[in-house]
Amino acid sequence: MPKINPEKNSPELWLEHWPWPDAEGHKYRRGHLGCVTGPPSATGAARLAARAGLRIGAGLVSLLSPPASVLVNAVHSTAVMVKAFHDSDSLSSLASETNCTVIGPAAGVTEATARNVISVLATAESAVLDADALTVFKDAPKDLFKHLRPTTVLTPHEGEFERVFPGLLDQLGRIEAAKSASSVSGAVMILKGAETVIANPDGRVVINRHASPFLATAGSGDVLAGITGGLMAQGMSAYHAACAAVWVHGDASLRFGPGMIAEDLPEMLPGILASFYASRS
Ligand SMILES: NC(=O)C1=CN([C@@H]2O[C@H](COP(=O)(O)OP(=O)(O)OC[C@H]3O[C@@H](n4cnc5c(N)ncnc54)[C@H](O)[C@@H]3O)[C@@H](O)[C@H]2O)[C@@H](O)CC1
Ligand SMILES: Nc1ncnc2c1ncn2[C@@H]1O[C@H](COP(=O)(O)OP(=O)(O)O)[C@@H](O)[C@H]1O
Image 1 (spheres, protein in one colour):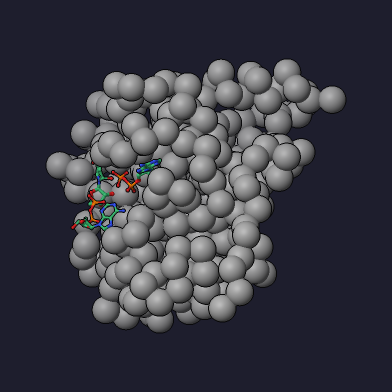
Image 2 (image 1 turned 90 degrees about the vertical axis):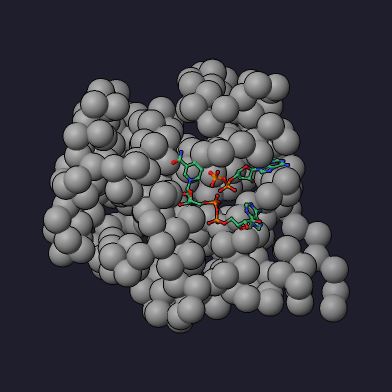
């Protein structure tokens, strides 16, 4: 098999598409991101994604919460809003009001999560599926694939990737496996790791090495899902948003360095945005 040399991720690939706010704009024009939260004991992951989405520039961010988790989400949120959903139909309705919805971080590996994923995919303009939103389809990945679109981004780590695309990593290696998974599923793939591979269904593939090993800490993937969703909510294409989010997430980790925890990552974003903003021609 011929060896592929994928393009290296860098701002040259996507910075010209950055969704800066208009002088005449208002918050509704900067995009609405939804982040679906888990049960009361597992809400922090979605809040990490939500804060990252707000920091990267989405005008509005809502935590879409099961009723039992509303109180815990509300006491931990300020600028981020909280909206309750009672079942997958009411989640579908809330997702239709967003420009992008992130689902999966600490959602729970349950039948309800599988129904919720399909409901989000049916109505949200675009979606990011992470963690449990992938793991729940372990036994029937084709049930997921038929709902995916080019406006969907999947963000598996290797363990999650293996559950949805069994055997592909061993057979093809990371780069070809990500390409093949994107083509088979019809979604943009972010295969996370020390070297993250981003693949688009049309065959484009990028490799990201711009990241610190201190990213290997609980919740950092949830932040990446929120950055990706926050950019898509602002109208960036799924592929550009995926490449940009992975680079920015890595840059945040390099800027912070040792001692970093996931909560630190969104707080590094203003400095990165300021350097991009200053470089506009
Ligand atoms: N603050 C929070 O509430 C957090 C919640 N989280 C949630 O916790 C749930 C479990 O997620 P985990 O990712 O821990 O576990 P997983 O349920 O994905 O499974 C972990 C298993 O996968 C294997 N694996 C293989 N390759 C791996 C890789 N590259 N990275 C990690 N594990 C790999 C591990 O060996 C381990 O046996 C998810 O719902 C996740 O969103 C995590 O995101 C951490 C933070
Ligand atoms: N050694 C490493 N070097 C660089 N980045 C890493 C390394 N290990 C993990 N990462 C990055 O950290 C993030 C971890 O995400 P994930 O495994 O989903 O964690 P969590 O579920 O705890 O949020 C991913 O973006 C991954 O690419």
